[in-house]
Amino acid sequence: GRWVQRAVAAGDAGVLDVVLREAPQLARHRHGKDALIAVLERASKDHQRALVDVLRGEWLELATDVHACRMVQRLMEICDDEIRLPVVVELQGHLEDLLDHKYGNHVAHRVSEHCGPSVLALLLPEAAMTAADLARHPYGCRVLQHLIERCPASLTEDLTATILEDQPALACHPFGNYVVQCVLKQGSVEHRWGV
Image 1 (cartoon, rainbow, N blue to C red):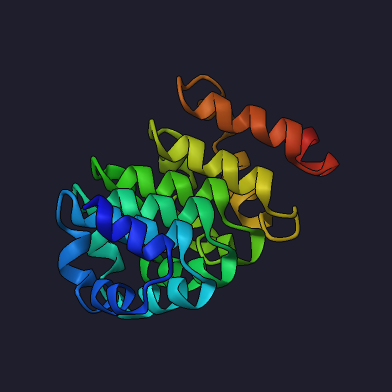
Image 2 (cartoon, rainbow, N blue to C red; image 1 turned 180 degrees about the vertical axis):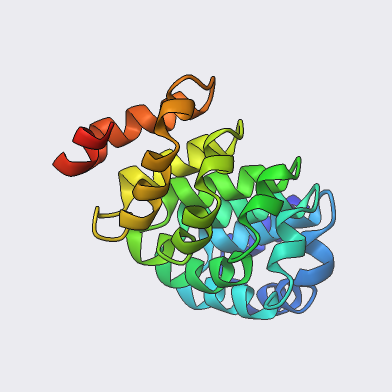
């Protein structure tokens, strides 16, 4: 509960050790996730790194858990890319699955919204292969927009080319039109002419 959060904030090594040891169970617990969020928010970067390491191999499952997904979202919001990278590596290849999941879509959104280009580059091949479908998806369209806005044009070339191939249909789609507008605002001169 709250005493655990306060102990974490105070840097109580004994409590931190217990929280990290019990992290897999705490993450999935209604209130336990709050102790892990306290580690992310108040503990040192070394403790953040330790938490990510303890949960290695479980991040995809945690991203789709009713309670743990909030901790994963908070990690994406407050940690730096060094801490986020191992988590995103585990989510790589599952973008569509996350977007179709009622909890996972929030995690996918936070990844695209908060990670830097070097981490987002891991998602670009998958996004480029399924760009037409993602652009028509109520949550996928926003993730594509973040990728286009946050990554340099040199990294999004394949993604933008795939979008432009389907541009006439996407421009008339309720969600796809936002992706086309994003290409117009953020894309290179050649991409703008393609629209």
